[in-house]
Image (cartoon, rainbow, N blue to C red; front, top):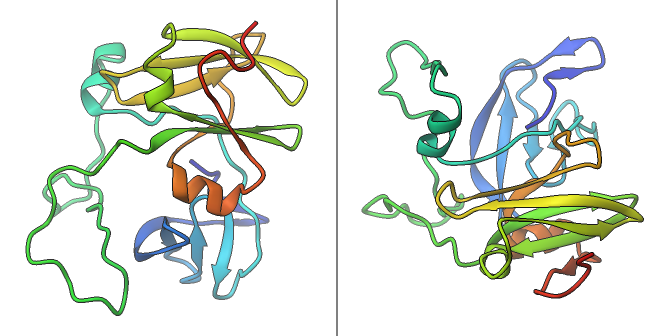
Length: 191
């Protein structure tokens, strides 16, 4: 998740069709600039090269979120059926698929984090072999990695317990934007 304010402009974002380096794109309504999700910056348009400020968030399933925050209300755009976007593997120039997939392959999904210039990717397959939370040192800082397979989610907190800036990503997408990252394996970096 990114802050909407760029300089003195407040932007409204929508998902854009297509991928760049195996990662989703989004577009702002105000300038029609195209933004890269994992690069965190504009890749095309009036604001090309402009960075976005990433915010700490947890990306998870609705069931997991609702169990933790039962009073949550959902904002749905008037006239829409309640689906904020449709995940597609389709890329511009390719024939459109006949049938929309109901699930996506999560076997290469993981948690990406960068601290003090050091990147680490935590595959869910490795996190499943760990306790649901454990300490880990990255970029000279000890953080706590959290994993919940039922919520299809992972996140990190700092020494003060506050949520850190992380990304759920597919391995290929993460490494396209963070090629110097290391991959977590059970037993590496644990305290």
